Image 1 (cartoon, one colour):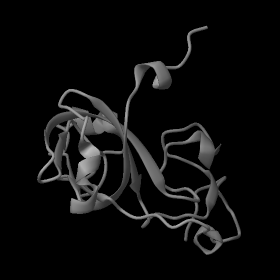
Image 2 (cartoon, rainbow, N blue to C red):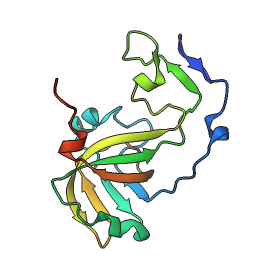
Image 3 (cartoon, rainbow, N blue to C red):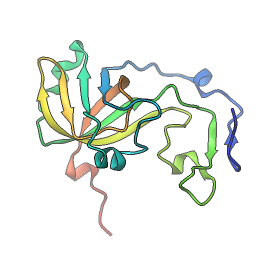
Image 4 (cartoon, rainbow, N blue to C red):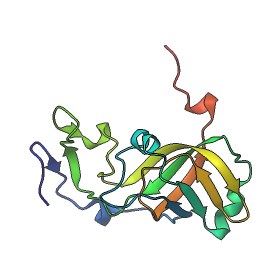
Length: 158
């Protein structure tokens, strides 16, 4: 694949080094398609959120108990169709190359994304969870949902 100036590839295929299996618990649904997708959640919210919702598969629906509308939740999703071999990237928005771990790019050795979203509606029986926004393509595999907990997730003050 072509690279931007300053980008560096790993020289190994991270997928070939895999040690853990993961299972999708559902899918992220949205209006976003390739070529028509915000680059981050801030942009997604500015463009109306993308009709964002989660569809949780039946065996995992009991795991929604205790989640409520208005609550913030973390989503972990799999962007497995992205490159996995870049360890230094040259994003168009930056003033020069940066290490992959200094970026939120989905191009990374393990293409797991992290999103903090607000639940706007929930139906445990159907597994449908409406959320305020996503920057994921429609059908993106959802790996996990975790609650935002103020006492845990809030960075300490200086």
